[in-house]
Image (cartoon, rainbow, N blue to C red; front, side, top):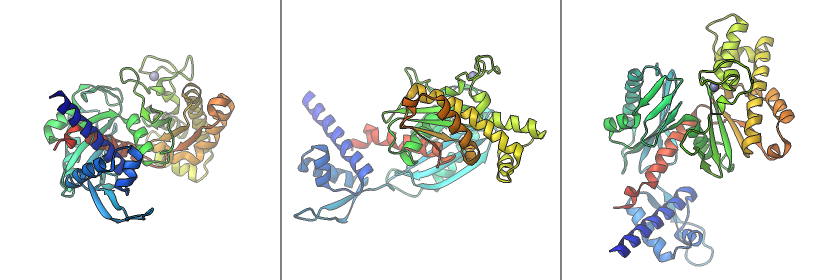
Length: 390
Ligand SMILES: [Zn+2]
């Protein structure tokens, strides 16, 4: 009996390995998969046949021959299912529906006061319901929902604490799974952003990257050697609460002089409202002022770039990543932030950790989080044993 169990497990693992090759190297061939995985051609052929009958793989005709019969190319059928990715912000919800390759089929952003749990959950359900209705008919339907949240969650998808939302101990995964009967994964938004950048952004080649998510606060998603680093208990990445002023402004975290009190989008807007004596001024207006080369706006961004730089120096010196990505809406201000930020980084970080580093503003913009959330939901689907047991 035991041996049968082991063989069945071995087959599942091999099938999953073959599937991963086809997902990431499509189009490919049976011979190439055998060559890369070390599995025999007969094993690959039999597993591919099962994947074709599961509608996850399709044949797309003959490819180039390297001598002998032309190989039949295999393509990942990315329309076999769809995923939903959500970015739960403080005052809006962005949601997308993608195919299994992360290609966006539908997207929406709605305003919502998410500091009220009931309002937020109703709005989330409405957004998800809409996207499910829009999903094209497919073999597996909507295979998962990923939700990026500005806070901590546990492995059961309970939001333990989300300070900017004011949420504590909300079982969001259970609530959404009960409503839709679809697997839900809850993850910190900066972690999700790091995954989005790694999978879909300009950082696919970076093995160790830090995604700095700038919004109401600052969160960081850390990916070391291709893996998301969550810390011993899942609470890593709170670099927004590194002190950059030993006796600075008091933070609600209990510390003084936290980086996010100076370098978040919220901090910039507070400062700009004081400078312009305009309590309603927002980021879009400030960007327009900067585009018009208004001195006060340019000075504000220059100072903000310095604050960003100081925190980034701490990241470089402590983690030595090969890529740092600055994300969130503030990435739109790159032209006015970048010079002072880089000046501080070059002046104040240690030369060896900085040597091969590249710092970039996100090209995915606010989509890094939703795309990352879809990617995590899709990865769960493919790592779930259910898929491999027919
Ligand atoms: Zn703090």
